Image (cartoon, rainbow over all chains, first blue to last red):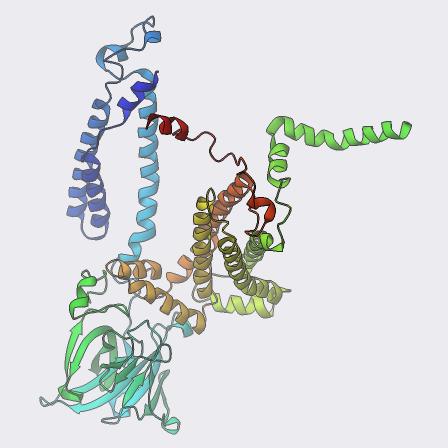
Amino acid sequence: MSEPQDSHQVPTPSLWPIGFAIGVACILVGLVVSVPVLVVGALIALVFGFLWVRDVLKGHPVTSAEPAPEEAPRAATVGDVDASVDRATFLSLATIGIGGLIGAGLTLPVLGFAVLPSFDGEGVATKDVNLGPITNFPEGEYVIATFLDDPDQGEVSRRTAFIRNNGPTDAGVPSFTAIYSRCVHLGCPVQPNGPIDEEAKKEVNGVELRPVLAASFGCPCHGGLYNSEGNRQAGPPVRSLDRFEFSIVNGDLVLGRTFSVGNVEGTGANARIAKYYKAYPGVHVDGVERFLYPIPTPGSTGN
Amino acid sequence: MAKTARRKQLEAAALYPLDWVEERSGLVGYTKWFLFRKVPHDISWAQTLGAAALTAFIAQVLTGVILAMYYKPDPANAYPSVVNITEDVTLGWLVRGMHKWGASVFIILLFFHMARTFLFGAYKYPRELNWIIGVLLLVSGMLEGFTGYLLPWDQTAYWATVVGINLNATAPFLGPFLAQFLQGGLNIGPDTLPKFYSLHMLLIPGLIFALIGLHLYLVVRLGVTSPPWSETAAGREREETGAREGLIRDPAVEGGEV
């Protein structure tokens, strides 16, 4: 094969691979989300894959224009008759094609297996934590509650919440402020700024309760400062401290999942809390900067 | 006379296996090409920092492989197994200490090696590609540090990883997804530890091995640079490094056409 002919073998740019890729993406999304998306993705991938392969095979009329001289004495084969692709080109294309198929067959499931389970809904099931009778929480005062979020994991799942009994709301419903200690800058544990009453320490079903006179919360890592409602006052945090959902079951205070807070207006029982889906520390949930994080990660939607 | 003949006989006997291997593989020649190279006469200890970093990496591989025999990468057993290695297994405290402190030694040596290369101008033509590979090696080394830090599975490990992952999460658009991928879910949990373990001892070391291979190949191919104050190098014609042999696009011909 002579040199100039090589240049004809470069495939022309085509849109079919893009469609094929979209189809594969739909398949991967469908694996997680729903079967119909999977089927649609498979159809798209098949159609575009077929068009792509047809395009690639059609785009190589290599020897039709001027057959190479050394090929002339060779006996005609089936390949010469019904296709314009010669044997060497066909073999190399077939090798690349089959190799690509095998490669994709190996790589795609492995890649999907590596990436997708992290986004498959709730990776770690959050368990409700019972903090004991609400009578352990004096009105208008913060209590540091430390507990195991998931006893199966042991000490590494120890979490801290700052709980304040706000007394009943105007409607007569008990109200609590349950702040999660994780700083919304980068996730260091936030400390209450005030003396801890170690003598009044209580242990209730493995939950440690220590009253504290805290009017603000500070982060030891980079100096983030929050007021008593968890609103940012100074430092690098981008929003207010996250909170726990809570419920009262048989007179016990039970913490549920955490959610993110944009801003808190007012105080205590009458506070208006701008509640958002759980977001990572450092991620803006309101303001102009929220457009930098347009898609909440799967699982943060609080389903 | 007799002694010389005997000596020749001995040499032949000693060299025979090497010749046998060489004739069938060419490996002896490649090893000579790799090890017995000409270097500038005015190089110093500064040029040994790369080899020192390589040695530190090999030490990490050796100690890491042995530690993996005693470490248990699941949330319930990880911390107890680290305690067991440190306190009960014979010489475990030493090997774990070598791995822990050796990690810092490796990173520090990488930075010294990088500083030497930068200050000596050894990243310039034709060695730019090797600088790029070196930067990738630095990133891989730091990823090793990040993933390895979680493995003791204590509070230090947990919070350091929390902050590290949340740093990634602050990147716009894809940051939260990257963080969730690293965590293997919404929180650092049972899936995070084995994931970091796998990255730490399989994927990233494999990457580092491959990059070191490329790095060394380029070092041997392009040779060692003289220091910038070298007088012999200053007035000398550029030595033929072989770098421009076999260029796909012949610069001389293209220059002629213009």
